Length: 233
Image (tube, rainbow, N blue to C red; front, side):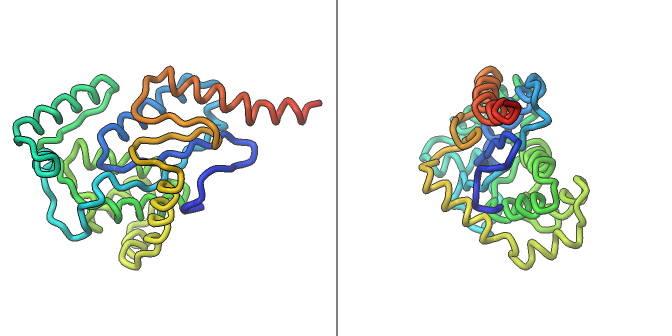
């Protein structure tokens, strides 16, 4: 349920706070995927995404800006330095198999993209939607606040385009986004990506695959695994 993390009987739930314009969120998601490929109980793991605003100062309706320009203005650094920082981030992303083109990315408010995430979750397509949004922003340079762009992306992952447009136009999932943001504040989450395994173990940032595997193993054994053992007695 929107704004309510944790809890799913018989499954290991991984709750993820992230933003679709967060470069380390995309990396973290890819690294979690790689860990799940090695995890023997991956079919019993449910990954759920929660909204976080990496750039809360960017408002709906603001014109898109290049990430380097935004970074330079926000931190008061030369644009050349911001470009160099983004190039380092892109190089790190390439190491985990991702293709970043931050030179053509267009930073915008992501509130509407998060509404789309919740819409997709309601139709069983959240994880596919999040991945598509990451690719749209980091690789393709699409404007992920534009309703028509978002509807096209939704259709690509199997969602109804007209229903997507209607949901975004009505703001049906706006409160779900706000609920996630409130919950993040309540949990003291001030940076993303932030992963919580079975309400017990947190992994912050784009950690190595081994860190995710350890969290998966430990949380599975202490929750789903122990419950199964108890039921068998």
